[in-house]
Structure formats: structure tokens, C-alpha cells
Length: 187
Image 1: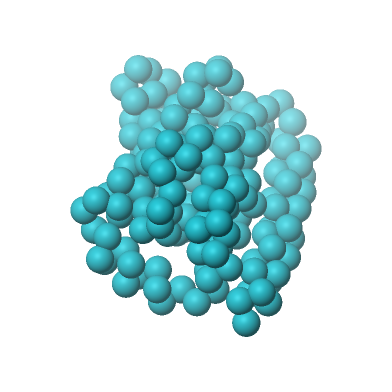
Image 2: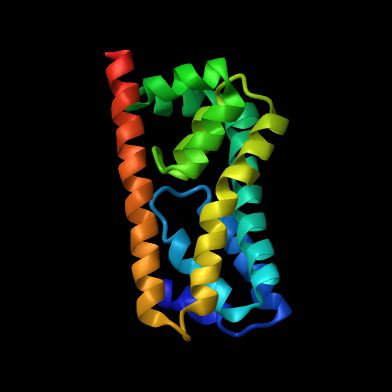
């Protein structure tokens, strides 16, 4: 399936640009999807500004659509789902105190899957405007990194892979520490 999707993106046309945008939008609804791989493939096929617009626009659009879906159409289902996630209690507390900051941290550092952040925000009291701005600002560094990595991959394969691995390692270490601290505060 991944090869099929990557093959469609590699054709570099207006259709494939829109397909990439829609694909990034849909992936925002699904936890643990290969967003970095798809964002990098889009980065390899288009100029950096166009690829960034496709990648960031698609993921933010998908996040906002999931937020709206959970807030207005599937709130009972989303509440039941997130109430089972005991490890996010600290995130809920931060979200209720400062929704913008919680979403921004949740986007900058992978404490939770992106779809989880969308769902939790949808059942919280955060405004759509604050959610949108925090999502846009929070997703920008990671999406930019993967877009640039894809754009540079053919020229510097080894150094690109090393930089991505270092970037991800730092994000996961910081995310783990934050998640552990949230768990300690709620225990």
C-alpha cells in the first residue's frame, strides 16, 4: 500500500499535488501512519515551498477536520475513547488550564499521537481558533524537517538519514520525559 501511495506522489502533477494534500489530510485521522515517509516523498517531488504547503496544509486541515468531527458529531464516542487513556490525564489538566500551550507542546513533542491530540482537543473546551493556531505553529518544525529531508535526500542520503534519526531521538526523549512528568503529577 505504501509503495502504491508513494508511486502516485512521484508523478509530480497538479493531480498528484492535490492527492498528496488529501492524503496528508486523511492521515491526520489515523494514529501511527507513515506521515514522515509521505511528507518526505512529497518533499522530494516538489519545490520546498510547494511541498511544505501540501504537507503542512494537509496535516493541519486533517487535524481541524478531526477536531470538528469530535467536537460536533462524535463527541460521545470520542469521550468514551479518550477516557480509557489514563496516561493523558496530565495533558487534560494542561489543556484545561492553557489549551493553546497544551496543543503546541503536543504538536512540537510527540507526547501523544497526532490523532489523539486532535480527539482530546475536540472534547475539551479549547476554541477552534486556538487549536488551529497551536496546530499550525506546532506542526511546522516537524513537517518542515521532513519536507527538507525529502528534498535533500538524493543529494545527501546518509547525512539526511543521520539528521532525521537525531531529530527524532531528541523529540522522543523530550516527549518521554514530559509524558513521565505528567504521569507523576497525576499519580
